[in-house]
Image 1 (cartoon, rainbow, N blue to C red):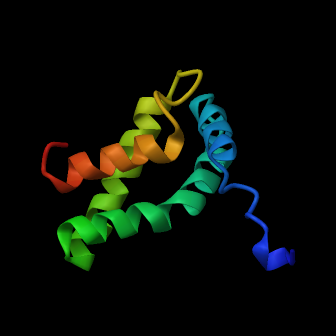
Image 2 (cartoon, rainbow, N blue to C red):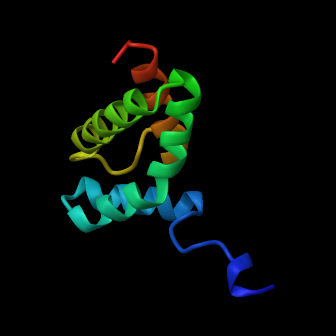
Image 3 (cartoon, rainbow, N blue to C red):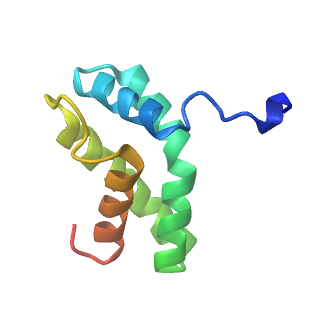
Length: 97
């Protein structure tokens, strides 16, 4: 296995959840790391659901604002981090946000 074959440090679900737990306590750097690790996948979901790049970009911001607000004061995300973010993305893309 080469270095390029290894998972990046913040791509495993447990690592993403740990970043969200840290973000819930107000750690902005952890939330930025979570965003950096997950936003390309969430954007891809939004783009596939909307078919419009500008709309997907616009929705992406709102999704992470909602996640930041909903995580404050929690011990853990309500379900695995990527699953939770995907659910928020689907809700926003369908106009139910």
